[in-house]
Image 1 (cartoon, rainbow, N blue to C red):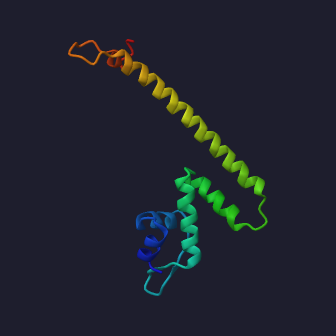
Image 2: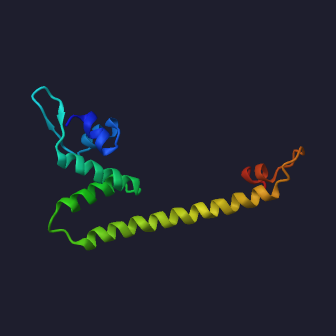
Image 3: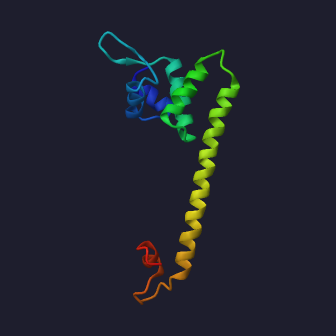
Length: 129
């Protein structure tokens, strides 16, 4: 398969595929004329990476996950630990977003939103509030 084929089948842009190759996450064969030749295994790895990235794993996490996936002697505990650490980061982000929502909600509700210049939102953002 060429990069266009693997891009359409994996759902990843060609630019992303080239990036994954540049950083060593995939290693497609090269034909005599230098074109990338992707095998089904490359397509499978790209789908794996796409799903991992969609779940928010970092590139380094993906590198670790790919190594674990390819290591048939891996311990599932290693995979679970990585996933648990990532889940904790997601939960922390959710808590931060909820706190932001609450704060912004309070600011919005305290603002009259009329023609007067007094605005509690701007006052808070400026550090005066």
